[in-house]
Image (cartoon, rainbow, N blue to C red; front, side, top):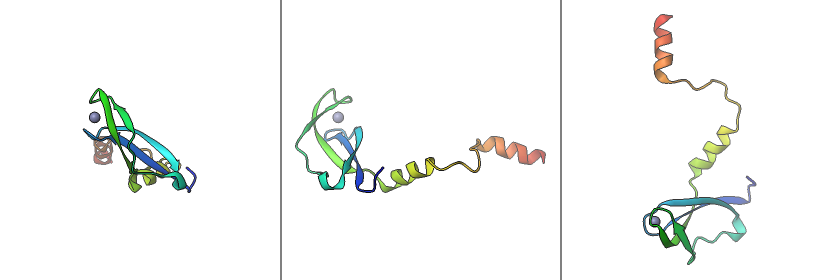
Length: 85
Ligand SMILES: [Zn+2]
């Protein structure tokens, strides 16, 4: 994601269900919206709520793109193996 873009989460103003995440240019970012959005949970048009996606989430996405040094293993698998050693 270019550094001049931010992820904005669009969610239902009624129940808070996350509808989608869109990346927008910071210059165009508007968090006050009067638009309506279709909420699959409410099964109705609801006023949308926009919020900048969490910083943690973007860090997580960045880390996911790095090569993994250690393959993830279930904890139980790891502990049974070390017991045998
Ligand atoms: Zn809803």
